[in-house]
Each structure stands twice: as structure tokens, then as C-alpha cells.
Image (cartoon, rainbow, N blue to C red; front, side, top):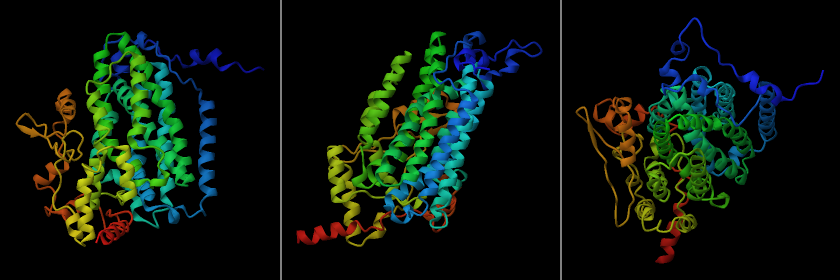
Length: 499
């Protein structure tokens, strides 16, 4: 018997809504889980997913992806990539696995919420495949780093990170719990798959895949590419969802969720992806600067995506564009200075040649961030290692849970954006962070940042050692300079030549 063309039966097979007879619609689709937008269920049936894929097709493609990624890993197991890689690149892998792997498992729960509680049949179908995607992503990104644990305990943080109170993981959990774990299915579709995955997930995986290939780490490049192709598919869940909301008079609600999620994603990935691309990746292997990559993959494509849907650019768009020149430089400087508080070894990335590259990509870098590094370099050259370690904790933003950033130089734009709510004073690193809080203050008001916990006496003793114990950072896991300060010798030689 001839097999029917898929498009001859696909729409019928996935149209799985029905009129409930023994329960009310709100019992079948509880508003707190499905989303209470007041749109009749028949309107949701107009959802038209851009990726139409059957389960057999999905299994076939995923099997091929896994076979490809695992076969590359097996073929290159004797390549000694761990021993031969630049230490900065090893830190890229450690940071990525710790920040991403368990987060992928959590994303499976978010996809499952859309899979069960979305009123749009096509959206449920895409989320079903997306849920399986995320389980696969968690599994493969835990399996690949496991072989390195016996050589370096920091790789164990691929599994351990999300169970700790390390400051970066507090920030990650706060963000992902917000957009994935505590929202209704419609809000998850907007905030996770459109605002976050359409841009930032693809950015992380595309950028790292390109840099990994340049660095000769074809195992990691194959893994990341395998994951990215899934992300690019289920990231499309949010597009047709937004169309339905806009067509039914819910543009303001959609816009607000896009604006909150996009900004929060930007702040988190300025710590993760920015330093990886501009400082950790060896200079000879850098394909683009972080700013160039953001302009190509986020600014241009995201602007086009929201314009095509009929949304406006986020109201803070100009502030976001300005941040591309500054935000991740401050985050990198802070991570290196507070290097004992992370599970990887930050690469300074400020040799003379690297500083020339940074000045070329970010004109004015030497007169701003370079001034700060000059002080650190002078202390290292003079043997004052103790002066390059922190004695206190930085001020933390109550929205991003990241240090409040600044631009050094003549302006020294250090500014707090406070807000008093129900007798408690909150601190924010920008008016946008404060605005995010103000959208749903009860959602965020009970949370305590790492510094809030420190001041409340939850961290004992109240010093760096107490903070490290609270963050579950054990000896052998505590971060230090990726290259063992060997790059400082270049500056010692320059000082000798200068007389």
C-alpha cells in the first residue's frame, strides 16, 4: 500500500482538541497553568507551527544526531584534547557544562507544561518533541564532561552546580525559575522559547561551536552543534503563539513578557558567553568579538523577528545596545578578581596582543577597563598577589543577582537604582532591572541575594572562607588564573626593557 504524503494527514492527526463533557474547560486547562488570557479555545486552534514533524521523523533525525556526536567522541578519545587544549578553552567547557547541562533538564519540565496545558494542539505537538530534546540535551552534556572528572574536579560541576549556593548558580536559578518553572504555559512559550531561545540559546551554541572547531576541539563542536539544531527548532514555538495573542488584543501582555525575559537573559549571558568569546578563547581562534556576534545573531535577527510579528522593540533597546560595549567587560573583570568563587579558572585574556585586539574591537578599552587591569598587573609584577584577591563581596543586583556593574575611566559611572517595597530596600544595577521587579514585585520580593544572606548572618564566618564554604566550593574546585599567571612574565620583560 502506498504511504500517504505526510501533509495529507498531518493537520488532522495533530488537531487533538475536543469539547469536554464531564469537566469544565478550566478544569481541563487550569488558568494558572494554561494561561488566563481570556482567548477562546477555538482561537488557539489557529496555531500553525512552523516546524511540522511527525514522531517517526523526529526519532530518525535524533538517532542520526546522537550517532554523529557520540561517534566523533569515540573517534577522538585518544586525541588528548584535555591535555593539549589551552587552559582558557578548558575553562570555557567547565563554565558551559556547569551553567547549562542541568538547566537543560529543567527546561524539559517547562516544555512538559506547554505539552500538557497549552490550548493549541500544534503547540502541544512541538512541545512534546521539545521536552524530549531537553532531556537529551541534559543527558549528553552530562555524559561528555564526565570523562574529565578524574583529571580535574572542576568538571564535576557539570552535575553539581545547580545544587549549590555558588553566586553564579543563584543568578541562573533565579532567572530560569522565573521564565521556566513558575509561569503558565503561554508565558513559558513567550519567555523561554521566543525571548530566550530564539536569541541567546542559539548564540551560546553557535558561538561556541565555531570557536570549538577553531580551537581543534571537534568533540565539543559536534556536541554543541547537535544541541543547537534542536534548539533552533523548538525555539519556534513562541512565534505563532505571539501571533494569536496579538490578533486577539493581548499585545501589551506579550510585549511585557518579551521585554522582561530578553533583558534578564542578556544580563546572565553577559557573564557566561561574553568572557568566553572575548577573553577565554585563545586569540588566534577567535572568529568574532562578542559584540560583533551579538550584533549579527541577536540585534539584527531579533529585531527582524519582533518586527515580523508586530511587536515593538523593547523600550530599553538603546540601553541594551550601549551595554554591548561595556557589560561583559565588567563581568569578566569581576569574575577574574573574585576567581576563588567560581568553579572554573578564569583566563585573564589581557596579554599585550590581547589588549591590542580588545582596543581594536572596543575602542577606548585601554582607557577604561585597561586602567583596572593595569593595577592588577602592577601588583602581580611586584609580587603582591594578595592585592589581587577580594576581601569583601560586591554589591549585588536584586533582580539579576549579579554584581552591580560600572564603566571605569573619567566617568566612573557607578550607580545604584534603589526601590523600597513593603519596608525593604532593594538595589538594582539599572533602571531596566528595577522595572522588571516592578512588573510583578510579589514574584521577586521574597528572594535574598548572596549579599543579603551575608548581611543576614547566614554565611559564617563572615569572610571569604565562609563564603566559599557556603557556595560549596571545595579545595580542588576553587577557581584560579587559568594560565597560572604565566602571562605576567610578558609584563615583567616589558618592565625590564623599559629600564
